[in-house]
Image 1 (cartoon, rainbow, N blue to C red):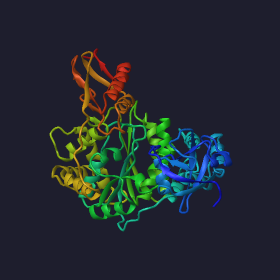
Image 2 (cartoon, rainbow, N blue to C red; image 1 turned 60 degrees about the horizontal axis):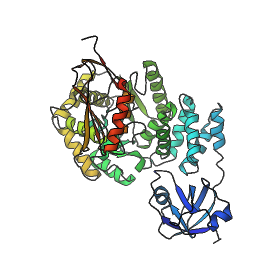
Image 3 (tube, one colour; image 1 turned 135 degrees about the vertical axis):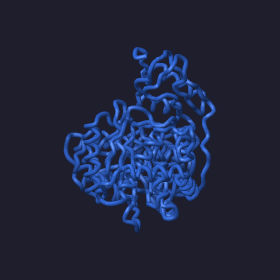
Image 4 (tube, rainbow, N blue to C red; image 1 turned 90 degrees about the vertical axis):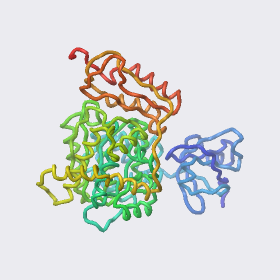
Length: 506
C-alpha cells in the first residue's frame, strides 16, 4: 500500500445522495495528491470504490490520519469504522463531452445516452455536471428518439422484475396537481380484483408530497428487491419507493438535481416514467395528465404532445400505455402534504362520509380505465361497467382490506398523525372562489415543511365555485415548528393571488 491512505470514520453529516469526503487540508494525502476543496476524488477500499466530492477542513474533529465520510458516501462504500482507504484524483468523465454537445444543440445517440447513464450511476458526475445534464435536456430539448435511447439506457442500468403473469398493471400521474393522491386507492382496488400491480413511486421532486412520501407515513416503503417481490407475489401489489429497489437507479439521482433547480424536463419525465414501469415488469400502464393554467401541463395541446411521447416511447420498449387527460384547475382532495394526503386516502378507502368526493371520483375513473385495459388490447366496452366494478370494490371494503394487507406485508400499518402547529387562513371578503394557483398552493405547503416534515402541509376548506363569506376559513396550515408556520404565513400574505375570490358575481 502506498502513502496515500487514511482511516475512515463516519461523521454523521447528511448530504442526501451526494457522496462527500472530509479531510484536513494539511494532511499528507491532500498535500501529496494536490487535492483542493471540491476536488472529485476516488475513494478505494479492499472491497469497493466510489467517487466523492472533497471538503477540506482545518478543525481538529478529524486527525491527520483520518478521512470523514458523509452518510451517503458511507453507505455507498459499505465502509466500516477505522477501515483503510486509498485516495486519488477521479478519472476524467469522458461522457461530459456529450452533455456539452447537447447543450450546444447536438443530438444524443444511443451509445452516448448509455455512456452518460453509466457515469451517473457510477457516481462520476459532480452536482455541477449533473445540473448541466439536466439543463441540456430541459424543456423540449430531447427528441423522441433521444428520449427512447435515454429510457432504454436507464432501464439497462438497474435491476428488472419479470413476472409470470401476462397482464401486469400500473398507473402514474405526471404531477403538478397538489393532493392528487389516487395511487394507493387505485392500487388497492386493482389488487382486490385479483390483478398484479407492482407499484413503485418517487418521492416529491418539486411538490409537497410524492406517493412514496405519503405511503411512508403509514407503512415502510424502503423495500429490498427481494422483499418487494415477496410482497407482490403474496398480495398482488405493493406501494414502494422505487429508489430503494434499484429500478432505473439514476432516476432518483437526477430527481435530486431537478428538485434543487425546481426544474422539470419533458424528455426526462418520459424517460423517468417509462423506464421505471418497464423495470417494474409492467405490461399495461395508464398515465394521468392533469391540465390547467397553473398545473405542470398548461394546455390541451401540450398534454397531447406529452401523451404522444409517452405512448411512443413505451411502445418502443414493448410497453402498452394509455393516457387520460384530466382537469388540473384545482387541488384534489383536501389535504396537501404527506400525512394530510394519507388521511384523505384512508377516508376514501374506509368509505367515510367526510371523504373528499373529487378524490373518490378521480380514483374510480382511473381504476375503471385500468380494469378495462385487462380485457382485450383495444376494448370497446362501455367504461361504466368497469366504473361500477371499481365502485363496488371500494364500497364493499375489499379495497381497504387489501390496502391494509399490503401495508402489513411491507412491514406494518400505522395511523398518520397531524402536526401540532396550525393556523386557519380566512377570506378577506365575500364572494365566489374563482381561481386556485396550484403552484402557489404547493409552495405554501412546502414552506410549511412538507415533505421533509411529513406532518406539515395544508388542508383545503373550499372548492372552485364555492360561495364564501368574509372571515370564512379557506385553508388551514399545519407545521411541525412555529418558525416553519410563520414562514408559510409570510408567503401567503405576500401572495394573495394563491386563492382568488370574485365578489362581483355574487
